[in-house]
Structure formats: structure tokens, C-alpha cells
Amino acid sequence: MTGIIRQMKPKTHSANNLLAVELTDLTRQIRLWGQELGFQQVGITDISLQKAENHLQYWLEMNYHGEMEYMARHGLKRSRPDALLNGTTRIISVRMDYLPHEVKTAIDQLKKIDRAYISRYALGRDYHKLIRSRLQKLVQRIQTELEGFNYRVFTDSAPVLEKALAEKAGIGWIGKHSNLINRQAGSWFFLGEIYTNLPLPVDNAVEEHCGTCQTCIDICPTHAIIAPYQVDARRCISYLTIEYKGVIKEELRPLLGNRIYGCDDCQLCCPWNRFGKLSKEADFQPRHGLDDTALLNLFSWNESEFMKNLEGSPIRRIGYQHWQRNIAVALGNAAYDPDTVKTLKEKLSSASGMVAEHISWAIRGQNCRRDTPAI
Image 1 (cartoon, rainbow, N blue to C red):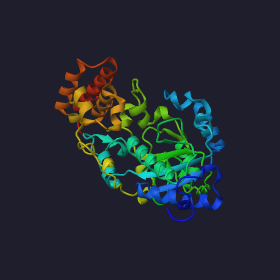
Image 2 (spheres, rainbow, N blue to C red; image 1 turned 90 degrees about the vertical axis):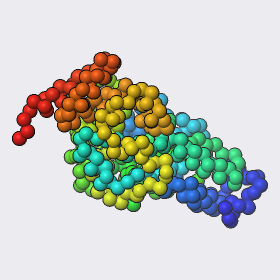
Image 3 (cartoon, rainbow, N blue to C red; image 1 turned 135 degrees about the vertical axis):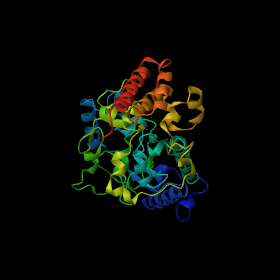
């Protein structure tokens, strides 16, 4: 770093006695370091989240979080950063693009009913470690300049209102589908945070630009977006295939189509995502052909193959049983194929009760399509 902050070396200044001009210079340098570390944007906000807290409390009261009990477990720590890390006064919020290929590729994949659709964020390696490591490196660069500041880094790893903080930090605005949208980058990005007591100057929030558009509401396969900015997770495909551990309601199963892990529909249709940027991160590129793999091939994996093939993947956290459940539902929605029926029946004999329920449903669906003449 050049200028005022550089003059501090060796570290004799603490975070508490920096002048305003020094803090401005440090903030400018933090943004540059962030870009060097692969973040496309760095914003800074204070810790006031009253509006977001009210929204969260209403969402919880309506039980829209379903079985995600962790959303309520930590009380108000999620919306009050200084309760999570004592002394926090600022949040450094970052975004990193993850889209591995053109949106059209994803849309085409949804049309291939015998192929698996996996949310684009999960095609590569787990983003948590990568972003957390980069945030730690950003902190280390700050530490070369001054001492006496507290911090903690997060990326979807603690009770943190990531999107609300990023919105206040000027990263984007929360759209009607509840995802964060950036005018220059759409919504295909991850977020991360540094909680700190550094009294950095804050950024201004950007204006919302959804206008009268409600394409995401209209296109949601399960009508989980029940109103603008209100998502009932109990109907959301991402929740059903990732967070939910039980038996998926029969009336929802046909709506899942070939989506076996997550759902991107509300992003795929968003007009702002025509500005989405492709990721340059090698870790976010598809692995093991997960961007275009036959459902039957994935269903044939045993548990050891599941653990091996998905090592380092965020998909692994749902476990083998729920992986089997999700694929069984997708096979039940696929076109009739005798090999599919044969494989489903073979799996049925050794499946757990929960998985067996979905396999039996899939067999019935396959047989129904076999017996229904084409028009």
C-alpha cells in the first residue's frame, strides 16, 4: 500500500486511532486487494439490520423455513452482528462469480428429462473453503498494515444475513425471488463477509431495479415464491432436494422434473442475468460430468462411489439416502424406459423405507407412461 497507511509500518498504530483520511485510504486498498484475490466486488456496511430482522421474524413466524430449525436457533444473532461477534461495527461484504457456462446450457439441460439437472453453483468444488481462504488472505493483508482490530470471516457458515448485509453494502438489491441481483453481474455469485471493529467508511445501498417484472414468481415450478420477496421454503425445490430430509409430498414430485440438487429457474429467467459473468475460477468448473449426466448413471452409484465421486463437492452434505431419493423422483418423471424400471426394482429391495417410498412412486410413474399410448 502507498500513502498514509504505508507510513504506519512497522505496526505501531491500532485500528482505534486511525484518522478519517487513513481509513479512506485503507478502504481503497482493501477493495484492490479483494480484486487481486478474485472477488469481483467489495462493499462495506454498518451493522443496522432492523428492516431485515423484521422480515426474518415474519418469515419464521409463518413457518416458511420448514425444517430449517437452524434459522431460528440463534435468536437475533443472525440480524445483530455485534451479538455474534462482540465489538463488530462494520461488515466487509464480497461477491465472487460462479457461473461455469452460458445460461442457455442450463436451460437446455432442464429439457433433457433423462439427464440430471444440478444447480449451477454445485457443479464444481465446494465454495465454502475457497471463499473462506480468500477472505482470510484479505485479513492477513490488512494485518500487515495495522494491529488491534478484531475480525471473523464467514461464507454461509454461521447465523449471518448475507444478502441483507450485501444489499446494504451496495453489492446489489434483493429481488422478488429473494436472491441478490447486481446490475452488472446478475445473481450468479457467492457472498462472503468479514466482521470487524475497523471503523471503515460505509457504502451506499443501490436502488432496486425489479420494477413491475415478476417473471421469477410466474415461472417457479412449485409456486414457492408466494408473493414478491416472500419464499415459502416448504415448496421450494432447492429446499426439498437439499435441506428437507423426509418424504417429498406426492403432489410436488412431478414438479421437480429432472432437478436432483437445487433449482435455478428463478435465476435462469431473470432479465438481469443476461449480464451474468462466467467464472474464471477453476474450482467452480463442472466435475465428473455433472453438468450433463444420465440420471440412471448417477442412480447406479453405490454409497462408496457417491462419497468418492463427490469428494470436495457441496452435494456430498445431503448424504447418499437423499441423493437416491432425489434421483428416484427424477426417474419417476422421466420417459418410460425398461432399463430404468429394471434398475428401480433392483434398488427397491435394499432401499431404506424413505427411499423405497420414492422408488415405488417412480416405478408407478414409469409403468403409467408405458401403458399410456402416445398421442
